[in-house]
Image 1 (cartoon, rainbow, N blue to C red):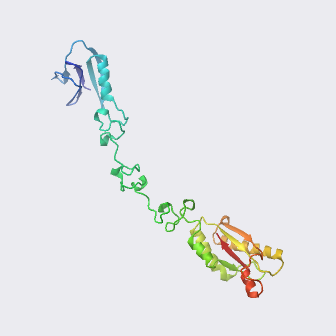
Image 2 (cartoon, one colour):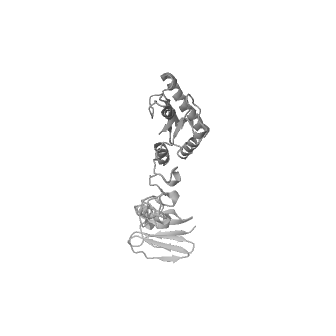
Image 3 (cartoon, helix red, strand yellow):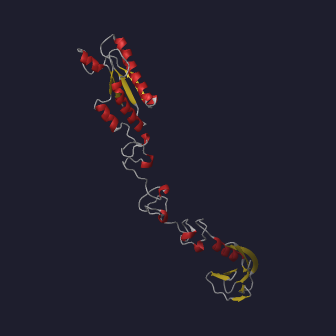
Length: 286
């Protein structure tokens, strides 16, 4: 630790910080006569009150003895320790004293042109707002649905955030339904799925796996053979057997609704055996 005995000259104020091999002089609008003697700087003025303080300079404490008015000493300390923006850079060294910054940038904040919270010096996309985790760049969004590809279960098809970026009604499933290729036919009085329809169920299960937030409804139907009550029960059984087949292929039961329409919604009239065969069916809707 070094010491300095400070007296003022013809006015206030002068202060010397003496560190190993270094003397730093700070002056406040005054003239002071100085001389350095054995590591001690001395200036003289009559009528001052003596006061001794310790000032921290980095990791070193400098012992300073003032011989001056108490109020003047307080003003020196205030001016030399003031940090208005509380950024750890004293105002005397701060190029932006009213704006919090960093010492590496002389007390000023690092520029951030796109206001994304990532300083230009660290921002790969300084003119485009992005995420800190992506070096200041926006996450890619190939389908333009505002769901970043990294979070998008359907990155090549525009959807909604509620469906993890997938559409509520995916085009592939809508196409399958509209083309009539999502219909399961049954033999008379039967609820058993025929081997020839397993491919249809496999294709539907694959699409439902691809779009995990989509639910479907299975609508069972019957021809006019038998009583109305019998056909109602048969249509429900056909829908439920189709649901069981999809579950066996990995589709969650919670995503499958079933309903039976009995003989009330034929696609053909029931006047011929061929037409009645088309009415014994299960079709899918979204």
